[in-house]
Structure formats: C-alpha cells, structure tokens
Image (tube, rainbow, N blue to C red; front, side, top):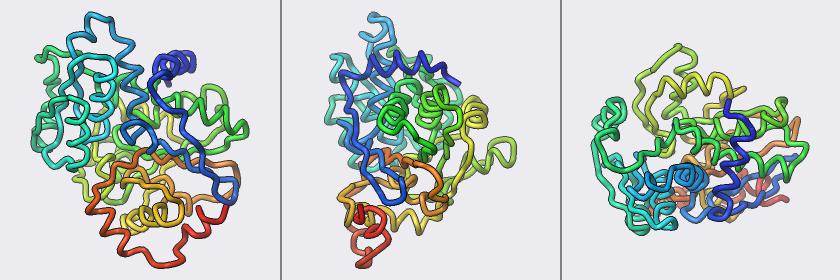
Length: 318
C-alpha cells in the first residue's frame, strides 16, 4: 500500500484547496462522511490537487489531461482552473449532462468517445501522444494518496474508528483511504462497496481476472474498466466486499434526501445503502463520495419515496 508519510504529504499539498468535510451522525455508532460537499460535489478534488501539485511546474504549465465518466473530469477541471493551467478531459459519450456541464463550467475542454473506444484509448495509453500532463484517475499514486487525506480526517475525528465503507469504481479512493487508516491502525476494516448492476471487483477477485461486465447501474461513477494494477492493489487493501442490490441503491438516494437533507448520486449513496448488510459492532463510517445526481433521476426517485422510510430511523433519528 501507499506509505502513510506519502499520504500525509499529498493531503498537505491539497489542503488549501479542499474542504474538511463534516461527519453526519447516525444511530448505532455510525456516521456519514459528506464528500458531496466538496467544491465540485465529489471527493475527486482531493486527488487531483495532490497529483497536479506533485508535477514539476514546467509539466503542469503544459496543461492537465485526464479521462473520466464525470466526477474526475470535474475535479481535474477545477484543479486546473484554480492553478491557472489548461485542461482537457476524455469522457464517455453517455456521461450525465450535469457532469459535462461541470467540466465546461471550470473552463476545461471535454472530448467524447463511446465507452468501448474510451477503454481502448486507455488500454493503448493514448495519453502518451498528447501534449498535456496526464493524471490517471485510478492508478496515479499521488492522486490516490491525495484521496487518502479523507482517511486521515476520519482518524482524527474518530480515534476509535473500526470500519469504513467506501464506494469503489476505479479503486483510487479505496486504495488511498486504506493506506491512510491502515498505515496507522491496521485493525480498521476497509469495506469496498459496489452495485449488483456492476460488481466488477468482487467478481474479478472471485474469477482471478477481468469478468468483462457491462454496467447496468445508476452508480455511473463506479463504471470504471478492469485494470490489472488496481486488481492487485484492491486484493491487498480491501478487507471485505458488499454488493448492494440496485433496487436498494435506488431507494437510498431519496432516503438520504428526504430525511438526511443529503443529496447523493448513485455512487455516493452506495456506502450508506450497504450499512444494513453489516453488524453495528464497531464505530463505522460510510463515505458519501459525491452528490452530482442527474436532476431528472433525482426527481424520479423522490417520487418513489414512501413516507416513513428507513432513513427516518437511520438519519433522521440522531
């Protein structure tokens, strides 16, 4: 795993540009870590500032380049804007409109590719023929270390932290958080969470390789491709996997909004949705990784929320 000292240095670099997000208490020694309140509505800003500021100035001035379904694109665009450098992002053509708008809002230029072409571009290391400094949204160690700043905050705020639930897409967030918490307290359980509409990593670990799945989930932020390097990292740093049924995930978003006053996107609601599958045997944090939900989807899901749903006891009861 990434050395704890490297996580601390990355978090220090990013600190002037990111928020120390709050913990929302739930009953039963459980909390939500609200990364949806970061400047772009996602934890991604932590890693992109850490990675961009680790570059030599000459390289950074060439501009930043990344690839993303949405939140990483906005995080990179925002970092480039704040640092005064150009930015381009390669995005899947089905990226949600609010996430595309966020990229353009911060002055970055999106380039759209079909999902298969985008994965081929990544597999062929297409960024090597581009002029900008490329920051890989999953495998870049400085980026993952920057995400680990979130884990350092958890240890400071909850010295008796026993478990952290992390939504997993490409794996950068969970590898950074695991490095932060296990580097200090190896006994903390790190739980990776995915939807049954795209259980990429649990299935890959069962099979020993790429399961060749297509995403069928509202958690578009988790729809990253298989990566052999991340496969090995996740095998090492994730203690347990929880797979959330898609209907449960769809119910979790309006639960959080109605009683918790928390707006979460699909990937952002995964860890909260997984809480019911785990015992209340230790202090536990579920990371709400992002809040950039498509307004049309949010409206649809809010219309299905029954009165007095589970969140009244989970979030509204504290």
